[in-house]
Length: 330
Image (cartoon, rainbow, N blue to C red; front, side, top):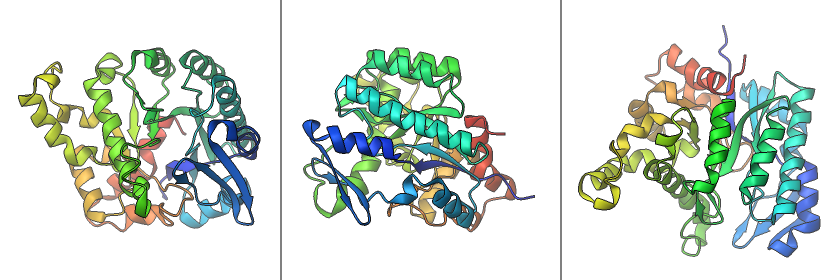
């Protein structure tokens, strides 16, 4: 029997969102231009590759999924998300994305579930949008940036959101935005190559040291890009907990929180993926592709099935079993 395959890191840019960015983004420093290859979004030093039809055309996406052997996409927005706008535009951008995702799920309920976007720059509005989308079909999680314009996710103003996610059994999935060290990382695409995995680690550290994971014990949090630098620096964080007074408020060492997170498979290194699975277990790792950016996987399933040492049971967990549990996919 072919195992269920669920891609938890698959990006979606509906035309309604792109149109709002094109019409109103410039006053917030976000510009969208059109090219034959697709829409190009620029925000400060970050310039996205053209966002072509494959990001929004469901038929094109389904054909690509079939070629890859992926049954379900958990749809999510990517850079620049919506937190760069003011409250009014942020709310309209989030609604445009979420409603388009609902339409995708209604059209193909067995192929698409959605990870809702929130105007998190205004937590009260974000909570209202969360309550709205929780009543709509297809929602399986919440997608937030690793920081909100430099504000860490451990800020108490976000706690009502986490409480609601916990109550609704909606996991929190993160994606790097506004990465640290942006000026130094501007050349050579380092903002993505290094900035993204570093920012994942910073967000994880703030969720641990800031007490979020202790306060919301049933909140599931998924770190993209296989956790970024976090799984590989957790020993250093734990050493800091041992010797630094700034870290001693935790009752447990940071390494004890490794299995409070889940992770996708996007490492671009068989050795790194092997290390991650050995560290947290096959039950905490899920298939991801970064669809359909050039930094993603063209054959995400083969990253798992062609890696030696994994039993069929562990492969089935990573390919879809873990995601089906977390996202409540039957």
